Each structure stands twice: as C-alpha cells, then as structure tokens.
Image 1 (tube, rainbow, N blue to C red):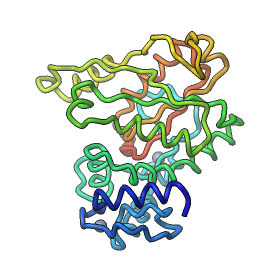
Image 2 (cartoon, helix red, strand yellow):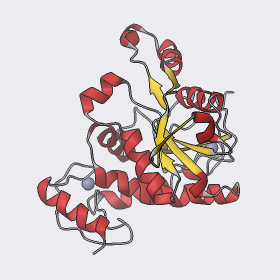
Image 3 (cartoon, rainbow, N blue to C red):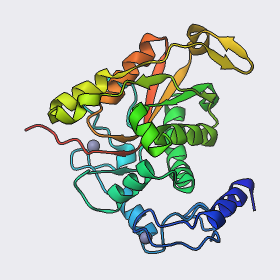
Image 4 (cartoon, rainbow, N blue to C red):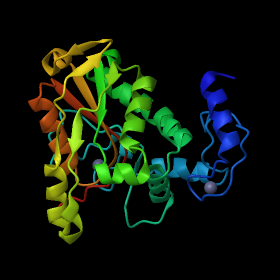
Length: 268
Ligand SMILES: [Zn+2]
Ligand SMILES: [Zn+2]
C-alpha cells in the first residue's frame, strides 16, 4: 500500500465516503482498480457512467472535452486545446453536474485526487506538445470569493491546483490571484454578473517566500509558464481576466486546465 492509499484509507475510516455520482454510501475499505486509481469515490454503477460522460463529444468540433479545440469567447489562451475531463451543463441533472456540485461544496480529497489522476496525463501531454517542462511550471487557480471561502471552508481551485502540481511535478503552487467579493451580484443580470465577476479578479502582488527567501514577482516569473487551474469553465470571462492579470505581472505563458467545460455553441 503506498502513502496515498494509506492516507485515503485512514480518511475513509473516519468519514464514511459517499459516491460523488449518487451519494450512496461507499465501502471505506479501498478497492484498488485501475479505473478508480485506488481512489473509489464513485460507486460501481456510477464509475462507468463517469467514463461515459468523459467520452461525450463536442457538437462543434466532434472531439471529447479534453481535446476540444473550441475556445471560450473571452479567449486569450495560447494553447491548442484545454486539458479537461468532461462537458458540463449547469441545467443538466446528470452525473457531471452532481459530481461538480459535490466537488464545489464538500472538501472531498479523494475526489480531487481522482480528478487529478485523470487530468494530469492530459496536461502532461499538452505540455510536451508545447515543449514545456512541467518542473518549470507555476500552478495557480481562480480563487473563490472570500464569502464563498468562508461559507465552505475551503477553495476547490486551490485543492485541485495543489494536487495537479504534485501530480505533474510542477515547480510550486502560489495564490497569485485574488477576488473581491461582489456583494451586489444577486441584483445583477446574467451578463452583468459575468462582467462583475471577471472584473473582481486581480493579481495578488504581495512578496512571496519561496524556498526560505523573499522573492519579487519579477524574479519569480522570469521565463516561467503558469498553469491556471479552474474547476469549471463557463464563459471563460474569469479565466480571460485571470490570464491578463498574470501576464501583466510578468508571466511568460499562461496555460489553462480545468475539470469541466461548458460546451460552446457556435453562433449561427
Ligand atoms: Zn453512485
Ligand atoms: Zn469543440
């Protein structure tokens, strides 16, 4: 048993795990299979459903989510596709939405590591295509608002970025962005909400302690690639804003990785 599995088993003995697809109680004893990466967070019925979801194809380019080349509207990416696991529709009541809901609302470490085990090879593949060394990449994420962070007690983007950085062998994880809490969000229309959300993301310019010494942002970013992690891409507005902020403070290249993406419908 490796350390991950040992920790996972300990966790599961204290907090009885539930299926991220249907919330059925799961056996705390880890059943190791290649399909669940030794991290069973889906029941035997939902695990095949999860893989069925990841095999769904984009209506526009005919590729699966992880290879879909359709970029969001506010796209400032310089990458051929967005490493991701599945398409997600907020109105859809299927497994994808339920798993994302649980990922956002529960601190479900096994689910985060399961998603990482699925996502890491896709990110590695893209980095090698772009001839970027994973060990040269800084990982960061689109943060939750302070209010949401307080309510849920964690930031799922941070969990995922850390886990992905470890999985891919990245340089380090840093909270490079901040988000102002948009208090009046409720009163805004959909379009205004998006605008407001994207404008509230800005760079966190405080000095960093790295490997025991304070470094300036310039020193930190010199020639570096930043992998910006987000759980779900909907309009791409937050990501667009995050990328331009990261570039403004000196990032050479910013790449995006995500668990799920809303499919982009082509305008007719
Ligand atoms: Zn299930
Ligand atoms: Zn596509």
